[in-house]
Image (cartoon, rainbow, N blue to C red):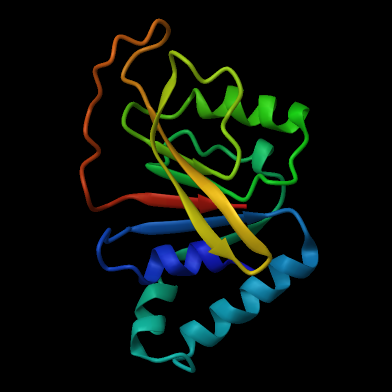
Length: 160
């Protein structure tokens, strides 16, 4: 439905320049594009109209999309098979240092590439779950504990 992308576009604390949503399921993609149209035509207010200018929605496979330049990536990975999580982990390693990967499951074999910046319980429409914020290290294995702070503003956001 695009909720994470729209929240990112509307959230003025981060001031994202571009918010990209990649959705695999046609029905959810259509729901998101319908919301985006309503935001763009002003139906959801002036804030929605401004936020809509930042949003780009794609119907496709997140694994086929180049998101290596993203500052923040979110994926609702709770139902993802181990094989899919392994593929995501490989792609996430291409993120730039300081980029954040937000997920409902920890990426496998993340040591040396990411550290868990935070984990918190959140209420979802279907129950409560841990959301992990993993930050890309400025180097590859072995991780020595140093990290680079992510600058605010101008960040992209990708959801699936």
